[in-house]
Length: 232
Image (cartoon, rainbow, N blue to C red; front, side):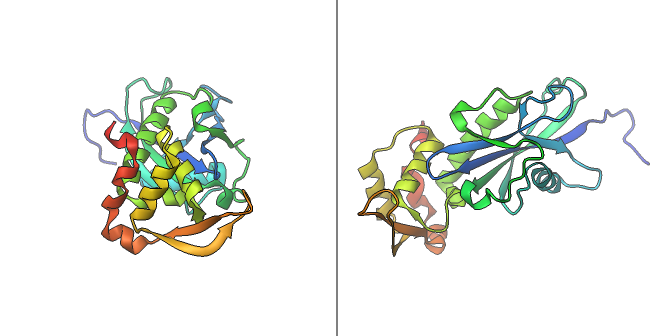
């Protein structure tokens, strides 16, 4: 095998930050690490990139192996390469974040690696630099959500304005005035109002909506003013 002479060789890994929304809270999916160092401590879903794999292939494989999840929104974020981030061996990690509607995938989730959902702001301490990865992923999520309809990956196909309002608050970690949000979101013209209502919260109920993806593609700027922390 031909190699570049005199050049060091490193391991390459992937780590997946899985965000989920259950209709009320933004959560993160964590697993118990299965090897030393830091065995049995809470970790992101991670693993090494195989010799015949791309990082994307490895991320999808790791996610399916450790949680059972597949077919979810998964996006490459950035590379983490601090020399001593892994105490065993120099390892570069490609970070990914995934977005899911928890209720849609709850039957698919397995517990082989003790995968467990935690409230995003009440998660346990994570190994290595995984806490930084989570913080970076959340910032990335806020930014991407202002430009693309990715938050709708965390909602069922039909949803209510209150559900969408809660999701925006959870992602931005801030309170958003309810009436102001409702007025702004409906004024964008990007949502399609359905005749059906969700009456689980009250007798009056709340109308279901769905995203008009064609209009969103043509006028994605309409959502920019709904992301308060984007300009913070």
